[in-house]
Length: 200
Image (cartoon, rainbow, N blue to C red; front, side, top):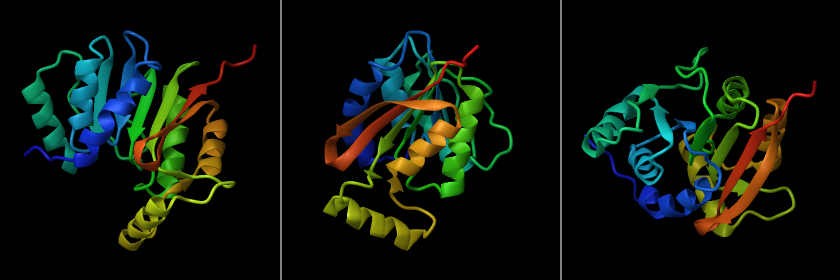
């Protein structure tokens, strides 16, 4: 019942190194696109004072549940269904949203919904953290990411490596501002935004 992703095993330690500097003790983290559930267990074990809420499409919940049942971590919540096309998310508030290797698979309207939803559930200072490949207007896409992008689009024309500038524009529209953009192994990026403080 447990699915296995080699990519999760490869990227979880570098991602954790970034998240340790972003997530406060006691933070409630909403993970969107939890996939197999490997990340949820790994990060919950490494960040025991952070509450981790995994979510995904219904087909992935059995694997996430199997990893959770095996790990028995008190700070790892039972997975919930979150389809970005849902009108109402199952979680109404969170201190941070973590989304790993997801927006290049989701359709662009669903990426828009992700940021719109983040703007609704996050408090001032709340974080949206994305990990994965990005393309930049002033930089050629790396050959490995060119191949990956072509593979994604051959499988689903609505998917593909997203333009950073377009994603950042969605974040700004949702009331967020860029807080970090860090290179990661295998031509991936860690990018995060914080929800702006409302002016009185």
